Amino acid sequence: MTPEEVAELRTRRYNGTVVYLQKLHSDLMVMRVKPDFDRPAHQAGQYCTLGLGFWEPRVEGCQLEALKPEELSKVVRRAYSMSCPVELEPGKLYDPTPTDWIEFYIVLVRENADGRVPALTPRLFALKEGDRIQIGEKVAGHYTLDPVHPGDNVVFLGTGTGEAPHNYMLWELLSRGHTGKILSACCVRFGRDLGYVELHRRLMGEYPNYKYLGLTTREAGLTKKVYIQDLITAGELEDHLGARLDPKNTHVFLCGNPKMIGVPIRDKATGSITYPQPTGVIEILEGRGFQADVSATKFKGNIHFEEYW
Ligand SMILES: Cc1cc2nc3c(=O)[nH]c(=O)nc-3n(C[C@H](O)[C@H](O)[C@H](O)COP(=O)(O)OP(=O)(O)OC[C@H]3O[C@@H](n4cnc5c(N)ncnc54)[C@H](O)[C@@H]3O)c2cc1C
Image (cartoon, rainbow, N blue to C red; front, side, top):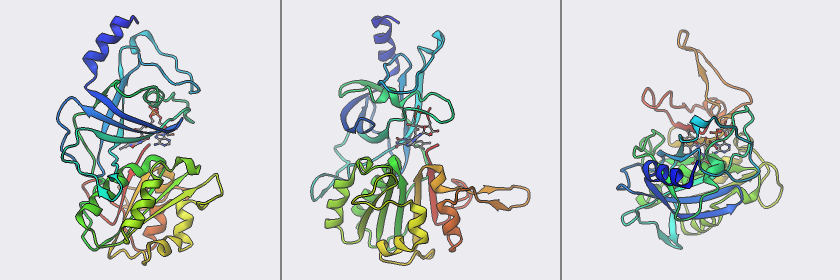
């Protein structure tokens, strides 16, 4: 493809600009995108799409991609939760009113176990500030704070970048002066993958009802080497929350790796349910009287979830 053809495709297909890009390390970043259109109305926890053309370069060290000539001019799109800086300066909650960008928290997928070559993130990680991108005009998703009442305890459990919507919901709760306890735990492989950890440490000092917990699975150190499921069964989550996990006044939000979430499979004919293995958080919590949302609209329980794949 000639530089002129690439320039023409970018002009025609892109509708947003990368206005901020912070690489937390080579495979993790916070990126803000300013759409050419007005920032769409949205709720904390929702997502929109980002897209780049197959003609864009990919960072090195990723699974190799073989494209057919007719694919080169297409755009690949994926869903991304809207994240939130929570505080742009210490002690002052972020004010969305003058904001014309949307924040995203993205991990580079270098290789896919199922053989499908990751198409978008190797290209997103080649971007720099000022570059153009496609951003979806429609914001979607039912993973929001709608079911939460002011005094409820709220537990956010995420893996990796599954923390993104939780940061936005945390901002919303803190802005509303939420009186219940709030715990956000995030499980990653290494400590360096906790991209917002400094912010959370500060917030804990500022809000007595807020607690953040970083968990690592491949590194012993300052953080605990446990999976979220272990934390619940050992009773440690309740210790950190400072309250019992009581289904009457607690909402649990689960986001990221489907194995951590463990969405049950429902047999439509018999109504029976089967939990996937290894045991996920939903099975553990339903054993304690919680009930997971059945679908976005059918039944709202007190376990809400967003699977990233
Ligand atoms: C509603 C929704 C919101 C999402 N929000 C985010 C977000 O805020 N940040 C983000 O990084 N991703 C998010 N994702 C995942 C995102 O849509 C892409 O799947 C991901 O960025 C990989 O894209 P890709 O084209 O490079 O690879 P793909 O070809 O799409 O590869 C998908 C595979 O990559 C792996 N994978 C996908 N996402 C992740 C992840 N976050 N962490 C570790 N492994 C992953 C899985 O093995 C999955 O099978 C979200 C997905 C959904 C459905």
